[in-house]
Length: 77
Image (cartoon, rainbow, N blue to C red):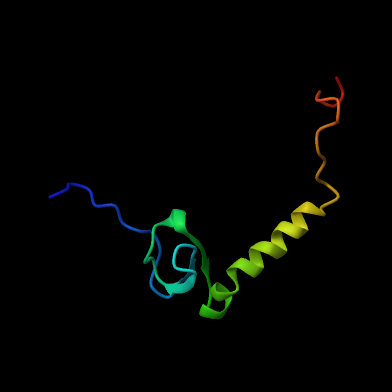
């Protein structure tokens, strides 16, 4: 018997989107590395991939984000 059992983290009533099973699941059914969440509702968890896509677009178009100069150096130097 193992001294320390690895448990998934989360609480019943929280919803997650499982990347492995590609479905919304209540509570911590799968390891954290295979899920997005927690979400407040099943409907929100089912939209997890859409939400992630929207957030990626916002990040990509954020005017505060700047890529490194094309010379490969750092700014101000």
